[in-house]
Length: 96
Image (cartoon, rainbow, N blue to C red; front, side):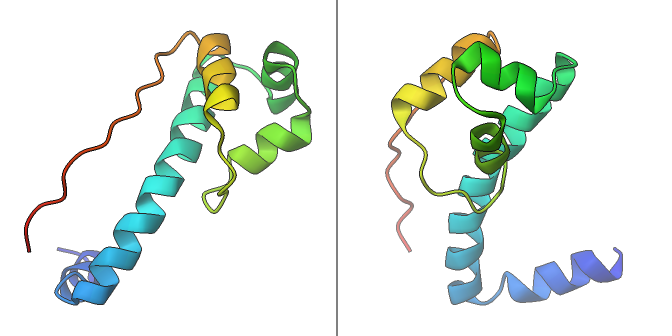
């Protein structure tokens, strides 16, 4: 186990850290998935933007882990352009 993994294991024992980490991870996951699918196609942000009908700057913002203004219509257009399925789910939280 490297130093980073040790630090994460220690931090994950703190309930406040776990809550904050999980919230940020969920937001970052969307950004990472969009970027990965775009890059897998060999597209630039400009090319994806043209397919989606928005600006390159909008795609750049959406691909940032801290982006918080996701809309379902835009995510649907991005998924369509990337030939991907958009899945939105509400899952019950685990009891503490």
